[in-house]
Amino acid sequence: MSSTLLSNENIIRLSVFLGGFILMALWETIATKRPQTLNRAQRWPHNLVLVGVNTLLMRLIFPIFPVGVAIWANGEGYGLLNTLSIPNDISIIIAVILLDLAIYIQHVIFHKIPVLWRLHRMHHADMEIDVTTGARFHPIEIGLSLGIKMIVIIILGAPAEAVILFEVILNGASMFNHANVAIPKTIDRALRWVLVTPDMHRIHHSDIRMETDSNFGFNLPWWDRIFGTYRVEPKHGHDGMTIGLPIFRDPKEARLDKLLTQPFRDEIQISADN
Image 1 (cartoon, rainbow, N blue to C red):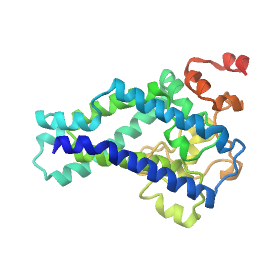
Image 2: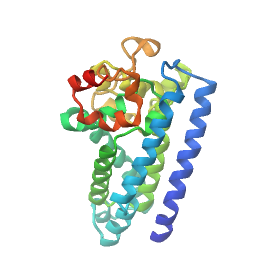
Image 3: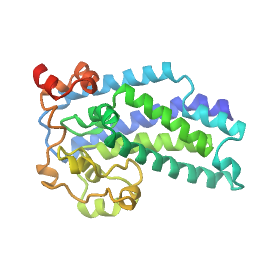
Image 4: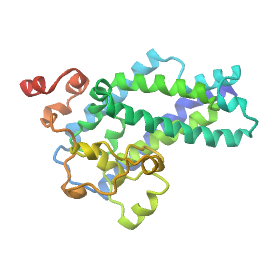
């Protein structure tokens, strides 16, 4: 079973990414939430090339991905869930929920610790938010996140099936909740009880710091409510809010070379460069 899971993981992840991307891109075209100042031609090539760069680098640095770590840990009997006498289906559900909680905690930490924020802020520096923003992360952050995730998987003893399911959900949810799509308010309010919606997550990309430090969830919306980081609406409304960061307002910052160097430039250098 281990070899089957590992061999199919890439196909599953690629299918979800391509299918989700096409669906969200079409939805954004048909039912756009916010008009964009920087259009797709200015942003998408750089954001998508970054996805390719991250994928290649992580395959080189981490030849064994989270699913492989899960198979190894379970084979050795490591982790909390391997010490409990519970059905595998229940273990999968518990593992998916706890992995989501771990991602929420990690996200909060990356906002609170300055050196980690310098890496993560590249994601927030996008002056528009759409389906490509959901995959726009600095390679160093991706590497750290993968390392943290694999440690959590070992501690939990998460089943390989749970890891695949979680990765697929996280991938699809990130594209969905970053999508520039209009959803009726009544539907959005109902959906927010079971998943993070685009209107809920868009607040997290506001240029107002107290809004940036809210609505951290990617998949499940419960953690923000439980830990007091939930915000219902942005101060200036979804049409009036400004997306991005005050120090990265020049359109040149959307370029790939600028994206990769953002963590290593402070405000004075950014002003001088632009």
